[in-house]
Length: 448
Image 1 (tube, rainbow, N blue to C red):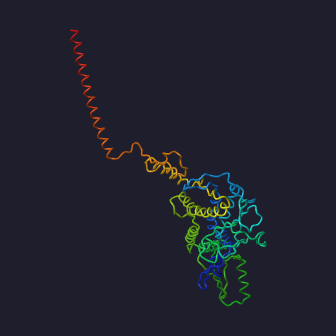
Image 2 (cartoon, helix red, strand yellow):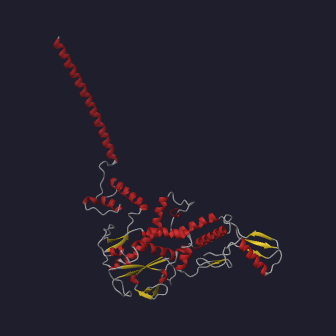
């Protein structure tokens, strides 16, 4: 990628004219030099794709009359596609692999198959198969108004191209401002500087390690040397000290016959390599929307704890991607049916998001108990269907809740009543005591 002496594929900084250039896009190069060669880019994409592939999808009855509650539709024929999209892949694998294509090259492609044998005609129900298409094996053919059809190469790199109707292609892409392109741009391009720099740092560290920890340098020789002498001296140094394929080789230049080693470059420590690598890591993570804590990078404290980072990862990287994919599937897969069904992903089992569900439930109960929401409004907050009870749409005020003025008046009346009751009890007690005394006195007089 980034090379001090030649243009990189991704960014290509040319030190001779100090001009940065982007070269033509190529999925294979993005894969080899970004995804495969850079551990941080790989970790970010792998984390997103694994999460995406692990989230189940369901078919629902389409909500009506503005009601956001939906009932699952397990008998819908599209469920067969979710259960068995093709002979090789599960639904989760398709989502995982297509997600990787998207974040590596900026595009993901699937082809949809119905019972018709002619792929050039519009897709019809039911959709019986879905296959991932390698981004390098498909290209759009533009018509007067958008894409007229797609050409898909089958049978590998030497195969023939087959024409597919646009309705049979599920294409998810990143934004591209090029009006002449129907393809997205790779996130690798935005992260190219950081990826290139980190890759070169890793190469330098590796080469220095292989060279016994000795940095690259020059071997100075006093006095002139002819070509044969110089070649032989260099061979001796390579044999005794260097690995010939090591980029940290020592270089022999002519001079005096007494040799002296001179360091050619600073070590990684001198260049503050660890600090720079952390900066590159944070930059790459930012492009993919993955908090560094999620992929186990020490020295980053973006969030208070791992749970918060994991929650942000789903909210900022995974769910936005799935939202776009849901729209594509709805348009391409479900519209081939009667229009009364929806396809959507299910987040109910994602542990990192369950904190949100508990917070929603607690808030709904609090608002219901305080008389701030109806029962159906509280159920809507928690994602439950509406209740059919007529009172479910009536806001209920707690029995203990009364206006403040009434509360003060009630308190005064209660205190007065309690005082009167105490006085009456005391008077009754005194009267009873007086009567008892009189009765005792009368009994004593009778005995006398």
